[in-house]
Length: 171
Image 1 (cartoon, rainbow, N blue to C red):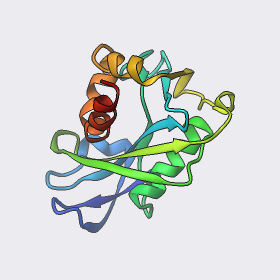
Image 2 (image 1 turned 30 degrees about the vertical axis):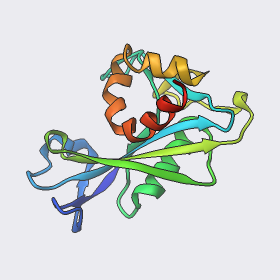
Image 3 (image 1 turned 120 degrees about the vertical axis):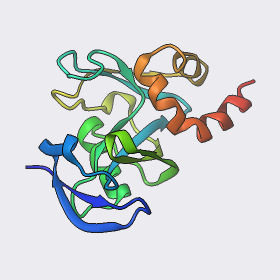
């Protein structure tokens, strides 16, 4: 049973925990932490994964991250590192916090990170039930795709502070 810590509207832990299976019942004014990690290889290419076609939300779509909810007792960064390892088999020496997004409707606060990895690009290990394929994509193609793919469009605002810096560099 997956448990989450709950936070108030100021981002302080409330001391309450919540069971994932009851996510839609989180009380108003309470939030759980979601970690979202944009993965970039040291050569500048981005890792994109294809969601499992059996997923209930955005089946078969490309996404530009690893991520999920932080477990009770985890910091946002610890949750991000765990999710990245579970979903891709990759680790990063450093995670850079790009920004946070409060989502009152889903009762979540999303911590978006950038992870720059230095690995063999064929060492990605997909998590069964989560993703079925992956590809590394150069920056211009990735920036173009972010306008077209449904999941990428949703993720774009989370990564915008970072993507704006690389977009300018590619013009």
